[in-house]
Image (cartoon, rainbow, N blue to C red; front, side, top):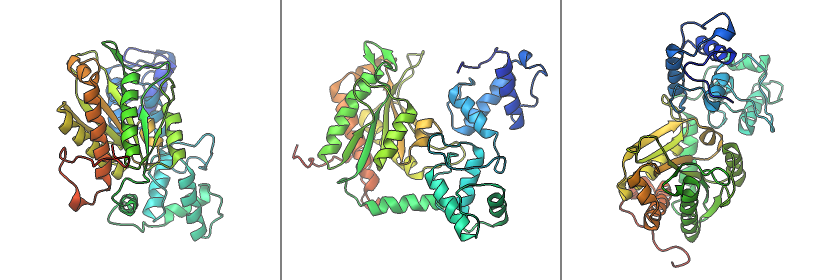
Length: 377
């Protein structure tokens, strides 16, 4: 889609203004004539507010992710029939409300991510079965009324957090037989950021290969989301990761900015500014981020919750790492150094191991060194 930004006019702007008005973020819907609708400063501020609330990149521009989120925000539970569709899943705020309601009632609907997947359908079917409804896996008027009538059963916290914690504890402290997806960003005809003779795709591919070898040496089954010259969409990467049944998903990137002073490491997990959805994902992001900052000495650009498509659609703890700025001379010099890439790979490996250590045995950040791999190297 074409980006919609400040100064633009037309029906697309009218649609955005109308949606923001319905959400209570804009005082009026703008001009009565869609052709005259203006994306003015007030509209830009409303878009920024919406992006902040939704865990999107805050730039005041309506691109594909923001437009998709605005569209999803229009739906309220009860507005439409909800059901599972394998080829084209239904997405929207109404589904997030359904998932939250099922979780409150004690049913495992997974993350309240607004995507009607198989886990949500299974939880809905179990609810219908328990309450004597027609078991069709669809949330229509009858099921909706039943959900409204019942009080919550789970109090004192989110059951999904407990399920995630129990799954991690049951996995044991060792890396043997764990499965990890390594996702080097971009690739193929999409080089990503370019600067100083380096491309993002090439840098993160080399990092992914180094990490793959280290994981395999410690008994982990690693999966690469793409080949050295292959491009995949974020949806395809998420689908591939889900198909492996992996324990975690690591997406590797470097950043770029018009200002050459921009530098440092930033790490992202699934969540919004108001509530973290993936608690284990947040923990993994924290471990990876702190290890990398401590071992590399790079600027700390902190840890952030985002609702980006890759973070949202993966069904395991997922972390997205921006490992510096190719547009910054100092960061670029480091990223070009094979020894530095080894430090990064070692830091990520240690962070993954620390995920499985019990709290009383967890070593301080930056201090742990992995023992020799299973191959003795």
